[in-house]
Length: 311
Length: 311
Image 1 (tube, chains in turn yellow, purple):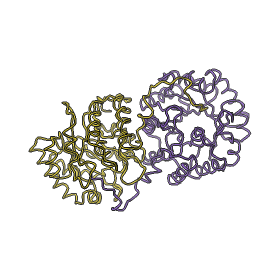
Image 2: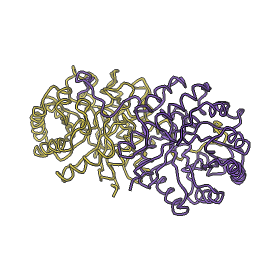
Image 3: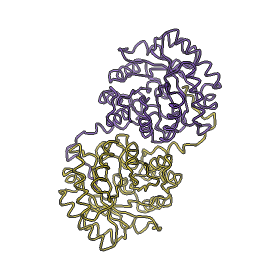
Image 4: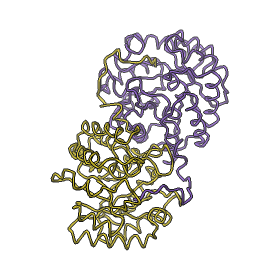
């Protein structure tokens, strides 16, 4: 049974812009977030309270948070890597802190130079700070569908980490397909394993389109009953490993698919496409989104528009 | 119940190269077809016996057919628009003639300047010539999932044309998503309508990725039990209407998806990717294939390969 309604979370403003070499000016970031909000997106990963030395693209997290519109119903989320980030995020009045850990020791080490245990201890500190400020905590597990260093990740290994997050009070969890290793059977199997072990954990899926099957994975997720997905405007992002490869699933292509399947998102696709079209200028290169190039499905052409293509 | 085995047909050599402005030299076309054959592809739309004035890219159809390897089990198919093309194709000893008609009068008129009735009369002539030469006939219906001039195409309208092809003896039929208007519910609904009306018609699906949902549509097709798909190496092709938009679903991304779902294709993905990598040089521009850029799913990276991307 497919969900009737899906929450679409925009992560391009964080996960996308973070991997761009060019620093996008604060005012442009604010305009982008506001355009997404006005298109009806109700959860946005606005920025990241990470060290500005590590990720200079996100150095203006507090200014962006201070500048964006905050209509009722919008969840303005920010990534926080540690207690220091959590304090800065609380000060910036985020609605939600996203704290993360990798599914494998190798990736956790490469990403934040800590063991998984150390990351989970940090997670507990973040959760305590969030609680003190009455801010929601959302967990994220990177490389949940496969690790570029270790290969396949056993479902039980992910479920064990989910259990530890659950024990820390987390009930909102994103499974990240960090390098595009998810496939429909892996998505189905991992969702089922988590649903069986922790039926009260609300799972969000964050797929990358690195091997072209991002939306095929979403189809598998929908069939597993998952009603929450993360994606990136225009497909902004890329893959940190494979140059030229695509990163995040594209938000407007995802919304197009969901609407065509009769699933509500509350998002205005035309407004979303208009916002996506502005992204290429912001980052200075083409982005992989398809609907932004092809236009609406029922777009009509005059009969002389056809480029002769017999067959 | 998903099919255990799927036939993957390569159409890039025809549908792909036909829409390239550059004429690909005959020897390169032959090498490309042979590379596909050696990768295990068992049905290839090699070329088109269309007027060389209308489609100069396919003017060397007979030479390509004469030059390619013809191992047992390979179906070397060619597109034929009319009786004249069918006679040329028979002379070139094709294994199969693909004859086509559009699902809408507008598209049929724009494509071949005929009514659907006129195209079907031509189809009967083609079928007779094929029968005389003991060559298989494969029908194809363009814009079956939506028309760029007329919009949505009622299932009953497509089924009526399927019925007329059936009456002409056609039992192999491709449904073409000519401008990328298919969606999972349309794919599911149209397949079911045809299966109900003509259970002995073997249906092949030819999706375009113009709006990013090509492989999501394949997922719907698989669930409808369809075991035959057409696609294009590297995603070669493009859309005749929307500049910059993607055309055919990419063969190696499709094969990757099928293999990951445990479905046999008989294709060697590594050889297919090697062939796809040569395509960009042939056509002189990047192609949209993803697996060819990202590499195998279980490709391992050294731990210092990670571009710092905290989160």
